[in-house]
Length: 631
Image 1: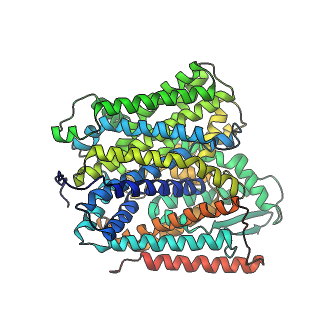
Image 2: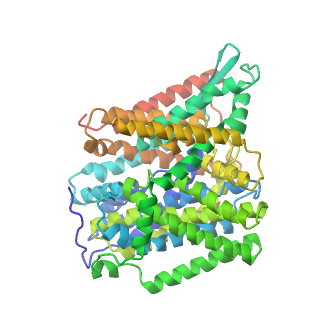
Image 3: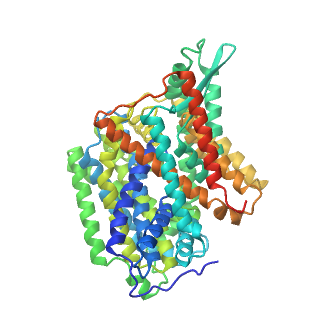
């Protein structure tokens, strides 16, 4: 087991020009790639370890550094801020289009709300650092922070080539594979975007389909068997039972349209009910920890003067905080047109952001950022903000916009703070300077917030169906749009279906309680179940394929060996996601320049056979590359 901390070296290189430059580049790239992934699947993946491996590989190649481990740590700090910013923005802002209040992503709006709220998230974490990081809390294990620190240490010590050189090779090879697959799919027309088949039994027809995106397979590998099974199983049950609720004779010619229409108008709201209860359950589970976290902020933590003095200075914090709050208020006022509603929005944002930041940081310390229930917390923010606005008499379209912007600002703030908490723990283990990491987080927030609106517009305007269409369904934003529209009475939501979803969630909670009592290791988590119901079947089945690849590697192995055994596959998966996502943005750019897709395979039967062959071939390649050498 590694030492808890390494002593900082006073003259060690840490915030160097090359580290700052690479931080900006990776923050923008990780943010852009996760926008694509999140819009497609409704999930993002942590950028910390992949960014750390890429930084170590680049700095090892460049050499001439007295301390590449601390440089690399600063780079991964900024890069992960870019990924977190993407989650906060893409889970919320597309709802503006889905609610019909905007027809594009205004650069000023998206940049202002993401930048100001991201800065607040970094600053909120400064006083909380002594609570969650320097004060040793045995309950907070920080699994992802420990894993990232272990990768960085192993890379510096050179005792594990797979952590730096080999890990870097897996990322690069994954990027190439992902890019070529996306090229064959979206530009050359060799591989279909999805493979589907309609099966008819009696008077009912059933649709079975799966998306050929390798990025989704990679996400399944990373999130693991438990989450993938929950999402795939709930989605499969939804899509296999829907035909029995459609009161119409179906045939192969109209079956797909009928099934999708029923799912869009009715069935997916079962998932909304499940996720609402999941959000409430999340806050109930952490209620004690949340109160302790908030109280402990106002109690002087036991910390040495050196550690305490390494935070950003009080003057800097107050100056940046004041600028961010004033700018956010002026932005709110500009959008809604009145000082009163603008003031209410900034008050709601600060209360929700600060309160839920403490909760999110605590959860990140317990289970890591990747497993943190951001959707559940955002649902809670929607319910609170919506209740406050309606109670004060706001109920028009402007109030819907106000509610969404409050949730966007709160969400960006708390997810950036949670990411900062995780990264500061990594830095604490490695002996990094907290103020330099905090400055690196600010750099990551700035770099990623500046590219959010262009990336969203590029994808929306140059992807068939745009954001909200079949290729980029944006399930989280769709959910948020449905909830806000329902709260303000602007949408006809099937409340009976939502209620049945809530009832089903309670049943699942009881089943989870039973599993814990009889010591069954499989966990039943409401948010993955609800998201599975809310997603098309074609997006959840590939998750299952990826998790099976991971399961084959760790099957019958000790739990403490799982991380090391799946390391190669995780690095390759991260590369796949980045490669496919970035080439997807490139292809969208070509479409903006009037380049069109070239369909090299036009016969539908041949196209299906070729697509399946390529897909299976890449899956086998994935399996071969991710397999550890000693198995």
